Image (tube, rainbow, N blue to C red; front, side, top):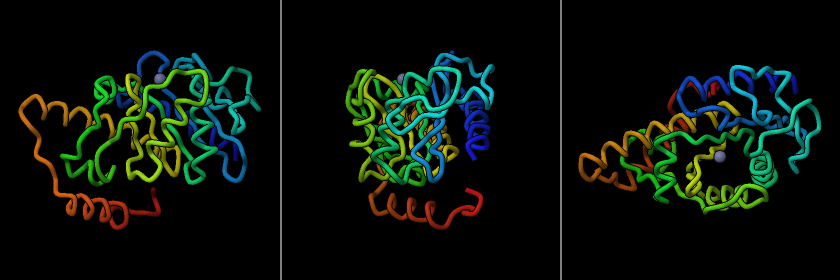
Length: 219
Ligand SMILES: [Zn+2]
């Protein structure tokens, strides 16, 4: 099971590249090992082209390396904190994608002015606190901001994006959609003032997309 998850998480890193969400090695995907207090994550400093399923490392929920030859991602503590405190989360993604990070640099939530945002995020994409790497502050900021919030994406102030999902693939999708709406709403703001969507309409779009749209068995 861990080998399958390593393959999946390795493959999903290529999606970050494909959608232009990462440069150099600054972005990572992790996935919880079902039924275990473990998760798999990108090794630190390895370029996306060189990633193999075998190079993906296994950590415990305190972020300690359990299996693998390489050091885990420098963001491992943040991922571990999320898995410890959000038991429904099975995938976490971190990127510095350009438009979303530009909103984060200004400390401004992305307002819900597109139906696609209402569908995917159920409202605005919120801003989390400024936090330095090296302790649990980033993880704490993610969990505190997203707990009780519909959004699966948070803009960590002056930093970048963290997304969560019921699977690693769902977290990657949220990261892709976050960057897409960040770009569109940014361009809209250059043209004038985007029009708000009524809360009742946001609720109805979110409800339909989350419960009716698509083919649930394939998600
Ligand atoms: Zn970062």
